[in-house]
Every structure is written in structure tokens, then in C-alpha cells.
Length: 502
Image 1 (tube, rainbow, N blue to C red):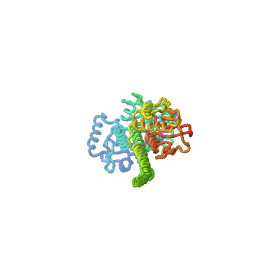
Image 2 (image 1 turned 120 degrees about the horizontal axis):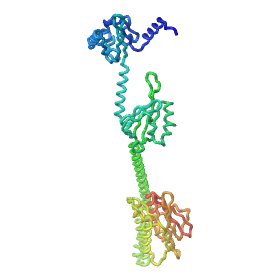
Image 3 (image 1 turned 135 degrees about the vertical axis):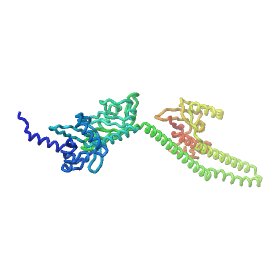
Image 4 (image 1 turned 180 degrees about the vertical axis):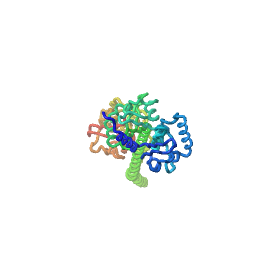
């Protein structure tokens, strides 16, 4: 192998000198600049021609350090003992404008014959200091954050996790370098991370969504909102890793559940109040109808027959007077029944519901015993099956049972052997209760009329009543969140049913 051409070697050294990104400055033992590369020109804003032959102290050494610099040179020249020579030292340098900036410098003494030279390799640390300060600020922000903040390399290996993050996932010490954030994700959510999050991060640069982490000490599930994004090098715009900001949202979820519960409760209350208002309006309509129609009829009878009674008395006709008086008494009784019915309707709509556990079997038995006191010679074939315990207002539900059983007894009294059957069964989320009798029944096409105020399908002469019992039943059951219905075959009895929530 031939030895390198000295000229080629010198050209190579000159090229390296010219293209170096670091400043290369050479001075002689008198502190005079003898070489000054292009990087030094760009850094200090002196051309090579301007710098050559000038004192290095006057060019780049801040006034505060010039004496120390010159003494250091003299000390080395007299002792040949390097103190900072061949060592990297960080100092402040001065640009042509007088601006001071941090730099790293290495001095190398060079001996040529009986002359000593110094080569200085100097690097501007301004950008590095800025980046260091930025990293320090970011680290302070990250450590002060209550969210989990983590950085990982391009292989997703964790490089940094802040204190809040380590506490959140149960790692009180530094996380081993081989671990990734996927190691702390709930097993059921890892597919979301692998199949959804990471592909989107690589395609668009970011992803955010909810997932669950696992506390490493307790195994507790931690619901979090995560944002993952790519970190790029500002100089090259190339990805250098990934960052994630993760927020514990368990408290937010709990608050949201409470808010939804309160909202549902409020909506339920609004619905209940709306229904109460509807019922009150219905009561007002019924009252208006009763006043304008039902109550006027007996009043007209009383007024009319009172006049007839007066004339009968004037004519001294006791037979007619007695008959007229009987009609007046009947009309007054009818009015009294109508007023009582109106009061019952109002009570069923306005009474505050006081819910408790109500044993329906006991309730039916109690009402049955009370009704039997007025049955006299009648014998009833009772068949009350197993009945549930429900949540409701016992006083109002007793009114329901009383009205339904008394109706069953009333409309079956034409039968030589009356029978009343009560059964219950659960369907989905409600109890179904049905009361059947073997009475006269009704036309099923008119079933809906039965539950309307003051509506009756039988004449007063056949069966007494004013038509508010079933309307009261419907109001009470609706207020309990249930429904009512009726079925029948004329001449073969009827079945009345209601439902109550489980």
C-alpha cells in the first residue's frame, strides 16, 4: 500500500477545518489568532481576515474573564502543566455585538519548534441550553401535574413516567425500562390499544378515548381518559417517540352516574306531577260535569217536588204529599251519594302516596271480613289464592280492594250461589291481580266506559251506585305506576284486573 499523498492529506485536513460545525481557532503563545474557520465566522461574526492577527481576548473573551485567560496561558507556558488544557470546559464567550453566550471549549497545546500554539475547539451551547431549560420546565410541569404523563420510545418502551402516573398505576419507584404502557392496561382493553389506538396514532399522529388501567398493587380497575400522540424532532420533523396524557375519571364517572340518577329522579317527579295535574284537571272536569248535570238533576227534582208538596198540603191531600216527599228524600239521597263520590275521587287524586310493604293477601282477607258483616243471609263462595307483598300506599290500595270486591258482590247478588275469585301472577316486572265474579257481567264493547267518572252500564233501579268506584280504582292504580282493565261475557260474570310494579 502506497503512503498517502502529503498534498492530498493536507487538502483533506483543510476540508475538515472548513466544514466543521464547531469553531476551530488557533492562537500563538502571544494570544494572537493565527487561524479562524468558517464556523467561527458564523458564531462570532468576524471574518477570517478580521480575526487573524487580533488578540483572542479582545475578540471573544468577555472583559470579566480576560485577565484569568491570559494568566492561564502564561502559567502553562512557564510550567507546561495543563490545568484546563485537553479538558472540556463550559464558559461564556462574547460575540462581536457584545452578546454573551454559553459555549463548550477544549484547548489543546501544540508545539512547533520553539513556538507554542493552542488549538481551541469551541461549540455554541445556546440551543442546547435552551433545550435543557425547556426540558427542565417540561419536567417540572409533568411532575406538578395530577395526570399521568409518560414518554416512550418508538418501540413503546417506557422512558419516563411522572410521579402522579406512578402513583396512579401503583409503581412507587422508577418503572423498569422494558415495560410498556400496554402492561398496565386492563386485559380486556388491550385489543382496543393494539387494534384501534396505535394504528390511529401512527396514521394521524394522535388518539384519545377511554380505557381501563390496572393498579399494580391492588388490582383495582381504573377508568381513565387517555390521549396518545407522536413526539417529533423539531429539527427533522421525524418521530422520536410517543407521549401519553392519562386522566383518572373515576370520580367524573361517579358524578355522572349521580347526575343521571338525579336527572331520572327529577324526570320521574315531573312525570308524577304532570300526571297529578292531569288527574286534578280530570277531577275538575268531572266536578264541572257533575255540578252541571248529575247534581242538577236531583236538585231539580227536589225543587219541583217541593212545589208539588206545597200544593198537596194546601189541598190537604196527604197521599200525594207523602209520595212527593218520598221523591224529595230519594233525590236528596242521590245528591248525597254524588257528593260522597266526588269527595272519594278527589281523595284518590290528592292523597300523598306513602309507600310501604303491603301484604295483598292480608288486605283482601280484611276487606272480605268487613264486607261480610253486611251480607246478612247471602253465602259467598270465596276463593282468594296466594297473593304477593307489594310496595304501595296501604290506605289507597285498601280503597281499591274495597271497591272491586264490593262491586263483585253487588253484581253477583242475583245469583243463587255467588262466587268471587282472586288470583295473582308475576309477569316480567309487574304483578297481575284479577278479581272475578259470576254476576250479570257487561257488554265488553263498553269496557272502557267503566273507568270513567260517573259512567254506569246498569240502571239505578237494577244496581245502586253513582259510577265513581271504578274511576277511583283507576286513579289510585295509575298513581302507583300500574294499569287497570276489565273483561266480561254478559250473564257469565266479569273480571277486573290491575297491575302493580314489582
